[in-house]
Image (cartoon, rainbow, N blue to C red):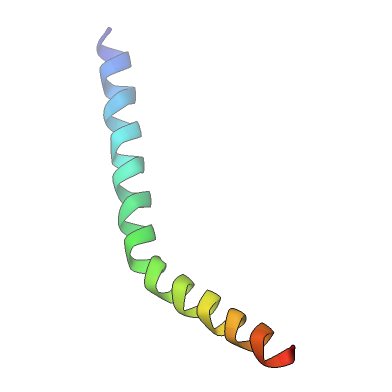
Length: 44
């Protein structure tokens, strides 16, 4: 039982770090996608 609790704590830690990473990365990604869409619109 103890091991299960430890694993879920590790899982939560992993989710938190992934979430933080995405929060940092999201604006960059969105800016990139917007730029891509603008490029596509210009090509038409």
